[in-house]
Image 1 (cartoon, rainbow, N blue to C red):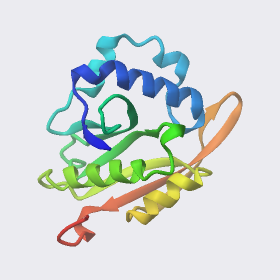
Image 2 (cartoon, rainbow, N blue to C red):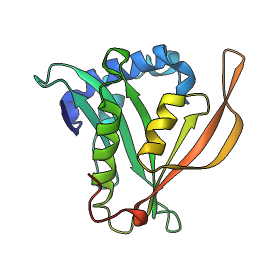
Image 3 (cartoon, one colour):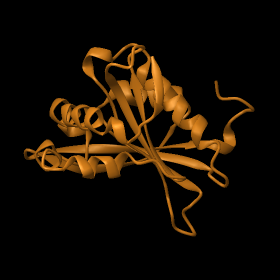
Length: 176
């Protein structure tokens, strides 16, 4: 397993995995397959282009042949909110689940987040009935701080979301 920040050359692999996620688990994302299938490759390149406050991590097979998991980190840019960042678009292909890929992606994300001066917390939202994801987040130290009822609506069905936070200040000297 190789985990690294995605680059321009990974845009098509990212696009394919992202679209698969939107089809496989449409309730887990704020976007839809129909919307993102219309995005150009240039849009995807722009989405994954890393910066000081944004990156997309990808989990690849050892031979580098296939992208099996993704997660996005975006730091808030406001003067009063730059102490926070958000996790978006966490997804592991069904064939790769149960192998620790999600955990490794999040551990790497947290390690990279620790390098951001002044960053104090990482927030995320997860569909309330996604027990495996919530179990992973809790195991890594995320705490639930709220629930939004009917946060998402897809095909006339509502989904609640749990809001979770990871406080970097509560870490010991090494996360691993």
